[in-house]
Image 1 (tube, helix red, strand yellow):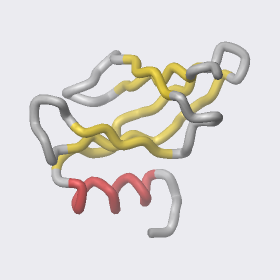
Image 2 (image 1 turned 180 degrees about the horizontal axis):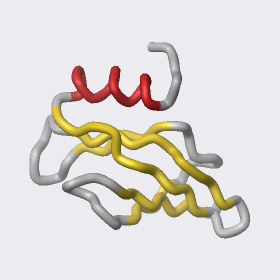
Image 3 (image 1 turned 30 degrees about the horizontal axis):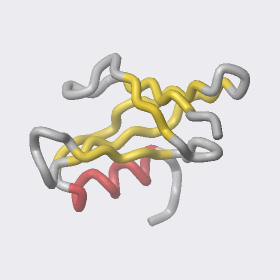
Amino acid sequence: MSHWIYELSGSPEAEGHQRMAGEPEPGKVVVFERAEKPGIVDGFVRESVDDLMMVARFRWVAGGDPSVVMPELLRAAAISP
């Protein structure tokens, strides 16, 4: 199984970071819990996908408590909650 590389941009906590993901295909949104701050998350929306290189680029939408981040993230991705 191949792994996707997620390039994350725009986050004050994860600017320029990359993460490996084992999903067969990247979703429209991703949420990562901050390692140093349990219960606090950063939400990202997908901007582009390079299927050949298996790189998905995501931009930061919001960070904080999940109950605040998720509605912002869904709105940015044009997904109905």
